[in-house]
Image (cartoon, rainbow, N blue to C red):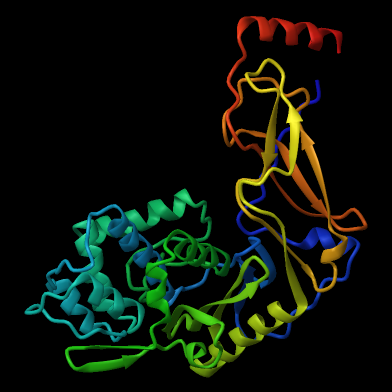
Length: 385
């Protein structure tokens, strides 16, 4: 019996394996301490520099703050119309020198308003008010942030606060921040729309979204800026374009640039290169069988196998037509089988045989055991085989 041990690719798949047989497109020179470009549609990193180096994330921290608030909304622990008190700790953010929504202890803003204040205006005071509303205390909320980071396997991230102000032991990396951004986008597509807002007015104070790409590139629909003296000017930008049968989304991360203009222009360079130098190829649709195979000792004679989701692969421009898919699976396939059970892998390779991507091959529908006579008959057939 041939057995296969599935190897599941991580969220951020390196493309280095292509280099042995194909010349990878070279990214433009990016004036940033660290950067990374992710094709979120295929979960592939297209370019990076020092992406695992620990760095101050500044207000990019608020992506995790937002994720946990969105989670609380989904779980009905908060509502958008619910009002929250403004504590003295939230008011004290005025002393820290960072961005503000300008709320005070006499106000009771709605959760919806606080989200706009945190995401559009990057308000540290709004971040504290939301964190206290979800976690009870700032300390408990920061612990929640770190537990979530650990659950995602973020090895170069540790949070000490909810705002991103400089503090010893508060750090992340370009790769980890790309993961957090991707989680916000994919897990909460409706709340993600906050990141596209160009401005927000609260208490008669209008503030513009500092993400300059929202006004420059129609494909950009988020995400978040950040700045401290130590972090420099940072930006995570997310952009989408239509593909036949779906959408393609790129996420760029630039850390430690020299100015607001630099973080926007360097991000734009990465995004433009990602669109121009790479093709995203949709190979299989979610839930669609890529093979139908015999089942032994089952109530059904055969079962469909496929990928758990839509399978998209990003390759250098013009190389998509040469992609090949190979199924590696357990044989024989013996019931009972459960829906989603991994029984092998789908291997995607170039025309030259270089592996580009490998994803689990899963059972698409359950197959219970056959009756006693059916099992006995298949047992005999297997023995003969």
